[in-house]
Image (cartoon, rainbow over all chains, first blue to last red):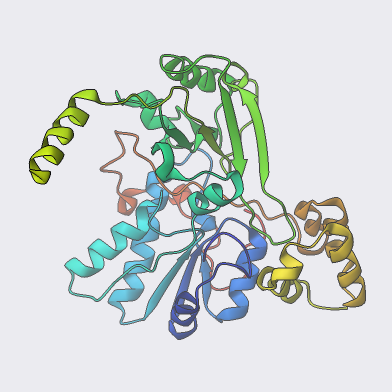
Length: 253
Length: 96
């Protein structure tokens, strides 16, 4: 579906929607869902399967079951997800895997993602210094190596540290754990950007900038993404440069 | 009164309207006989004011997790509380 109503739906994605027998929808805004219902008479929202206190993983598996049941019934099924259906979304990949394993034809169409909007709205080129992306909880639960000479983008900070997968959000004390982990690689004075892209075309991107030390006391919703700009200059790799110099000399000779 | 969803789609796909100032957009919406909720949302730069027309529709956006310990959760063995009370069959889901 892309991120913004009216702006991002590709002609091909629209065609898939119009030619499907049934549509499943996991969108980020109720008005966008209403818009989708204008495009097809049988749109089934996946939102009601969420519930506070219920593991999101159960919800995602239910979504796969709902979709594959219609596929098995011989229906042409189109699942519409906000942004890009394959980025930070478990069930689209899974249902395609299951459908193909059962001999059905299934594929994914790319969409304009929150990440794409982030680059445009914040003026970031991930190719300039490099860019790492992590689900915020993964940084806490696993030993990951952060390269602070590039951008660091953290997703789902609003529920960072929730191991139950059943909460709607986590509090300042959980963001403090994240800050403590990040403080190994960043100064507490380092700027943190809290970003939310545009869902409805009458909105503007929401961009807030705070010091890393203030992140715990700053409310972060699940719709927002946290970006840490580079903290260190790129360090030249002198050994490899010397090796390349030798190759260049040899190729000239 | 113009249809709000159609107006939003029109704004979303029009380069001039999509980047128009709130004042310019408000003028356009006035001429188009937009709903009061849409005009108020544009003037206040707050789409949440559309709730006056469509109701409050909270939407969850998390669709992914790398958290270990949930790999074997099986919806076939869930109790009834894990299912929506009113499975959606094409009707709008105004809130949960």
